[in-house]
Length: 333
Image 1 (tube, rainbow, N blue to C red):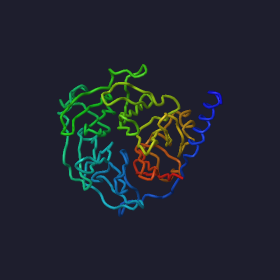
Image 2 (tube, rainbow, N blue to C red):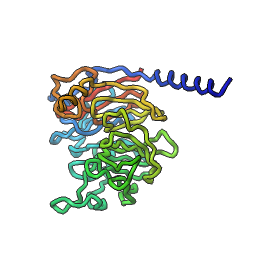
Image 3 (tube, rainbow, N blue to C red):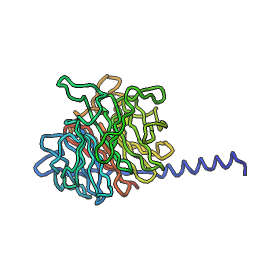
Image 4 (cartoon, one colour):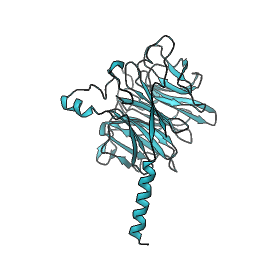
């Protein structure tokens, strides 16, 4: 058999395999806290623990971090800061913890699953590469974090100048990279909204959701060796999660997408078909806005995906940037 024919067959098989990645929307999965009609102001993240419980950050006063069971029913609220813009739940040698970037307080926290804070990195521990505020404080705008296999903590200043800070597991500063001085494919980092340790590769890679440039790329853990995943056809990638060889992405301009290790999009859900209409009118009515009221929500159609997670079974849950709070679910078929 010729080499060309073999390559053709491999390509056909690859496409067939990609076509098998399908998801089904699950309506009305999430409940609400007692006495509330809605979850609450969502501008954060969603994550799942090893028991299958879901954690949703809510920015209303005293809302804390809401916890829901496998069935989507409200369980409890953890007394954590209201501005956990980005957080992950990771297992370490010491146990399972919540690692979070507290946007409103510009600090990092590590907490037990019961909400007990066991470690923090305060603003003055960061190098002042951002400059200072009018009040003389370090001008940080931390948006997300993740933890490397060796315990190193990675934090991104996604609403600032997109610096990526690295601390060791004790909270001691190690290095900083990214930002306005590091060029990847001709462009500096811009609104690098969230970063994640991508465990699908060996060694692991650092995923950068460079929303300001509407692109996704990998770096090695030292900040070098950039590898572009996609820089066209995206809708402003804002968050991601991993399951097996797949990565799901929350795109704030109206889509949830799924990608394989080769950087090919293999599924898309919740596609908001009014983005072109809104763009033509110069408005943000249904995408990339927190103002869409529940009366205008359409079943299975996203507005502003901001946080996302796979559960252990490969199902996808997405939380939106929405002042009322909205979480959607798709089950893998």
